[in-house]
Amino acid sequence: MKHEEVKTNSTFPVGEPNEAFAKFFVGQSYLASLAADPALDVMIGNVTFEPGCRNNWHIHRGGYQVLLVTGGEGWYQEEGEDARFLTAGDVVITHDGVKHWHGASADSWFQHIAITAGTPEWLEAVSEHQYQQVHA
Ligand code: MN
Image 1 (cartoon, rainbow, N blue to C red):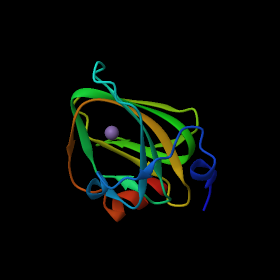
Image 2 (tube, rainbow, N blue to C red; image 1 turned 90 degrees about the horizontal axis):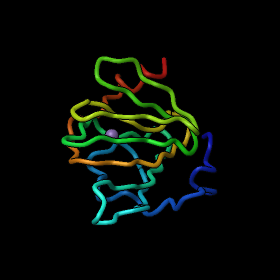
Image 3 (tube, rainbow, N blue to C red; image 1 turned 120 degrees about the horizontal axis):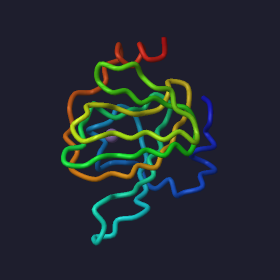
């Protein structure tokens, strides 16, 4: 598997196995909170995905999300759009109400910082068929 260094040699903390959100993910992810200041209206966390791990389709209601890719290889897809291949240095902006998912490639670790405002609405899992399609 490619890019294991994102877990073993991460600039930002990798954190603990992401148990709190595990039911909204396929595969194992890790989450470290980087900033959770109650005076701010955003949460900033570092999310590390094992190969094949991705989150369910979801919507950031009443807010937005900015992803800053820090390592590995992964994917971002909005409903009805082609998936976008992501590597370190990529920036993704998700607007309020847009259904999407993000996660690792099948053969690579992946890591992004997520800056998130609003409330997530978690939807169905990305099916194996949908996930295979983005790699085609
Ligand atoms: Mn998201």
